[in-house]
Length: 434
Length: 158
Image (cartoon, rainbow over all chains, first blue to last red; front, side, top):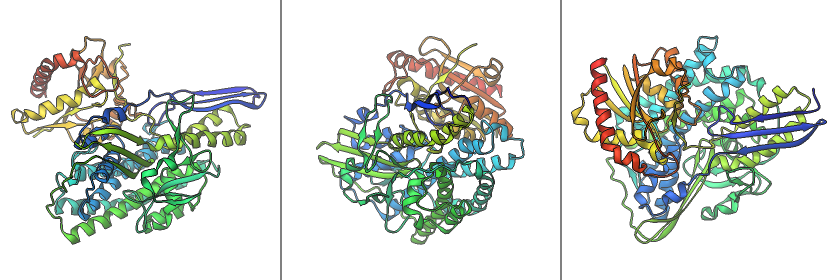
């Protein structure tokens, strides 16, 4: 290995948005190692100011094409918290089904299209078609399609939902639709298990790296928390004062990055599937526990590369949980409920949900006419940036004797393991005639 | 009956980037004028989800902001061949879901629509904001007229 080398990964591929990795090594010593986010800052909070409370959910659902259901639910919870809207049991069950659908959509996208190519030794999912892994690609597409259609059925659209509104749903799924969905979910369990076996067969490619850190996620008494729960930390335990969430998230700016960073009990913390697994794994459904066992994944796992495996575990959990939710909904019978009405008043509300990449918080202040005067959104990926940086600082000295190309790939895999969503809003067809 | 999908793509929080979605909303208002074989879809910034949408139709018209060095508000229809043969890099979002790669995957899975067109609208400003630029706002009626004509033409063609 050369004593001097540099690695510059600009606009890391297979992550959502633009992030750079920079490593300079001189005389075998690290001179610079930096994970930086170079996206233009987002202005969504400013867009929410001056909007009526009914408009906040549709606007925030456009922040991200992948977490649009999660943003919708965090937004609704914040609005309903401010206006004392108590949703019905049926609405809560359907929202749980919606969040399961989104988690499945996002996780299979990451596992199948973004992370699996690293494990199978190819640059993207495309060379896998027609190869010996063709069947695996078909399974991934099948599972992704099911998750999409599930979101479509519950929320009225695959992305940017329309049926989720303040106080309930604008349109409810029918018994027939729910039964058909439940049947497909049941069938998808074996497909998921097959996919897990393929990933397991190449899981030795996941670096055996650990770094102790703090994990933060929501936890609930009676379920593996996604829709509802209290803030929980592997370092400091439960924190019930949700309106003072800033005590936990402590966002701050760093000079090299346009994204905010966060820290709590240590210099950094991690949110996402691995954080949820580390805090709540005993509440997983049996099939999900089996998947975790296949990979010997046990809480607390300090290996960030296992986040992808925790996503696979959660995918199975979401399937099993959705089957149970549909059973409960059908047992009780779908009632033609109208959304609970909000009484407008000056107030502040906070909504917390677990979205695919981790803890998402919306915080709104409304005036006496129901218009938003202040908004704050805490995005999961921003909470992970500091943790990615510190992981890199421990990882590089451990692999510094490897060829630079291998170091580069390992660093890329590390960032991809976090499944970061750096920029959720930029979208633009750029056609250049060459 | 052959199914035709008109899929708007874009982000309404980024000014002219949302033109594809705004046009779909306008077309939905006049949907009684269209044949039942035609479905109007707000695809948002769904990225890879486009793969599954394509699988549902025999023919697809993608409606999106496209930078083809035209005047703001100018429209142009591209066939897939035009885009593929000129090796034009077409990105549908920053979500690493390169449009041509989605098409490639769709073809490999043998579920790509037989006919695929992109109705492009030249944007002026795709910075953050919920309103279209004044150039596009001013031209909205003519853009709507053009897309209606284009849908009519494409239906006759296929």
